Structure formats: C-alpha cells, structure tokens
Image (cartoon, rainbow over all chains, first blue to last red; front, side):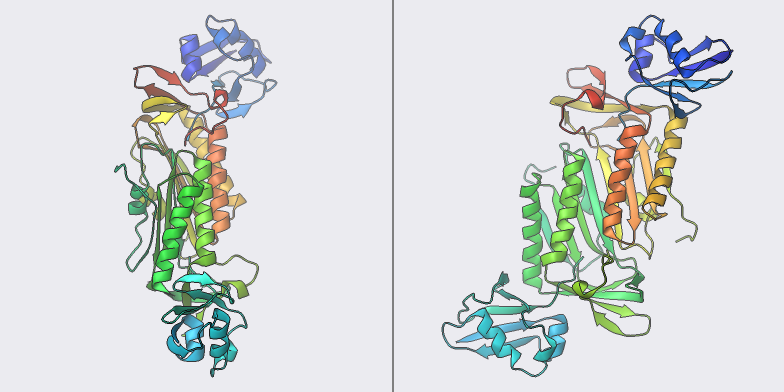
Length: 80
Length: 80
Length: 152
Length: 152
C-alpha cells in the first residue's frame, strides 16, 4: 500500500523534500513509516522519535496506517 | 484649627454633604476627625472604622492632622 | 517609538479605545502585549443593570492610578504600562477600565496585567452606582457581595 | 450581538487587528475582555532579529486552532473566544497571534487567555524561521532554548 508522508520546516530541509510517497506492507504502523523514512539520506538530522500525525491528528508509533493515509512528521512546534 | 472633610458616594448620601469644615484642637488626629464626624446626624450609616485619607494619601487613625489638611472618608472602593 | 516611554495611569471622561492603549505599549522590544477591558454587564449579582455611574475622589484616584502604573513598571520591569479608568455615566457594554501592558515575555505581561487590575480594585478611590431596570440605583460595595467575583 | 456566537480559531495571512478581535468577543453578558497579542521582537535569545517567516501544516494547524478555541469555550464556560494566527513573512512589531476572550468575570478571562496561548504553543503545528541582521536564517526550536521563556 502507499501512503503520503509530509515533512515540514527543518525536517523538510534535512530530507530535501516536503512530500514523499512510500510503499509499505499491509498492517504497517506509524512506527514502520518512520523506520522507512529514517533510512533516507539526511534523516540522521531528525530526532529518533519525532511527533507524528495521521490524517491531521497526532498519532503514536503503534497507530495503524491505511492506504492513502496522510502521515506527517512534525518538527518541534513554534507557534505564538 | 480647621480641616476640610470630604465625603463620597454612600457616605456623602448618609451625611447629606460632600464637604464639611471641622474645627479641632491642635494635635488632633485622623481618629479625632472621625469621632467628631460620627456625632453628626446620619453618621450611624457609616461603619465604625472607615478608610481615611489625609491630603490624598491613605492614613491611619493615629496620623496627625494639621490646619488646612484635606481629610477624606473613603467608602469601599468599587473601581474596575 | 520614543526612547522615553514611562508608565501612565489616568482618569478619563471619554470612551476608552483598547487599540489606542495597545499602541501606547507597543515596542520592538516587546514580544507580548495584553489589553484588559472591564465592561458594564447587563446582569450583576442577579440584578438587571441598565447603566453605571462612576465617580471618584479625583485627585487621589488619579494619583493612585499613576502610582499603580509606576509600581507595575518597576515590579515587572517594563515601562510599557497604560491604564485608563473612565468616570461618568456608562451604558451597557461601555468600557469602564482599560489596562495595556507590553513586555518582552508573555508570563510577565499576564502577571502585570492581573496585578494592576487587582491593585486598582483594592485601592483606587472610585465608586460606582448601578442603575437597575426597576428604576432604582445603588452604590456598590464589592466586599458585601457574594463569593462570586464582582464584574469585571 | 448574535445569539449564536461560537468560538473561532483560524489561520490568517493578513494583519491581525486586536480591536476587531475584541469586538468579536464583546457581549452585554461579559464584564471582562482580554486580548493577548504576540509580536515579533527585535531580539530573541540574544540575536538581532529582522523578521520571522511562519509556516504551518495548514489543515492540521487550522483544525487545532479551532479545537483549542472550542476546548477553551467549554473549559471556561464562554462562547466568546477568537484566535487568529498569522502565517507568512512578518516584520518587527507585526502581530503573529491574537487571542481575544470575553467572560462574565475577569479571573476566568485571564485563565482562559493564558491557557489558550500555552496550548497553542504546545500543539499547533506552526513553525517559524527567524531572519537575523547577519543575513542568516534559522528554524526555531523552543525546546532547545534556554530556560528564559521564548517570545512572545
């Protein structure tokens, strides 16, 4: 299955992309998305457990992802 | 000596005046001003120890008053 | 902005403009601005209010407002403090008091704003007489009221 | 005022007008109105700032801002909550965030205002890149900074 991964701010800079399409086996979790992402060049500049969101809601590493989901890796927020 | 006594809000209503001139012996205190005031008709509607000010600053009952001072009897404040 | 900003606390007999107060505490050194506005409410302590008449021991009230502004400036380390308290006849939704604070950091800005309104209510010789829908009027004594905090 | 007021939290790409925010939380039932404005400061963590670029995960940030407005309304029992966060390039003294709260009583108004800005800083996916006088730019990570609270 395929999911869209969104990257922002310093994380987008680190990976040189603001959006990626990843292919994952059925039953994959948010943690699996992150593990796949961490194998990419530049990912060493991300922390080991960044905040993640699925379909615009914060999600833990064991949350399931489904085909077509929008998975976001959220850098430290700095609003205000 | 003579001092001016100012009354405000509910206290002015109680005593029927917003300003009085009182004659007091030399060496009189804020407490003496208040005692003199309390003998007036309507003063029974004042509390026994209202807030007092001398020349626009809060003052305690034992503070001295001098001829020409402006002594104010301050009802419960309700600004804001 | 002028380099020579100092805290201001004053009585006014016109509409309080929160935007104008804010602009008096704006500065490139401030990350946080707060304006508090106290407003005449339609219901107070269960009675229907049509308006409020504010009066003061004017010279002393003006002095105390300025003193509170100065003390807040010193206590919270900012010159950007502006306080206005209105006197006279106010209608529903009219602002009776406006307090603006500018500070580098938001924590101090909130603390200063809150400290100022509490000091103002504690010590500035201002009185209010509420007018009710039944035509009566009454001087308000906040201390004699229920535990519910008085407005604003 | 409309009878059907509800909390609002939104992203904007224009100037934040504190007076307009205030008017959105005015009501005859409110004795206290508070506006908090977060502003771009000239110095942050000892570096000279010339401007800030705000970006967001926009649909999620918009959802979180609305959720914070709704949660504040429920938690502090008032529908009169209006939050705006600006995105894009901001100059010194530009407002990045405006938070207006109207409440019957001042204590709850202050608490709600403070709660909203802390929640916003904790969970809304917005990022800022500071531009410095030396021409460099840097993404800001509030958690990596000193114990001194970040602006605003």
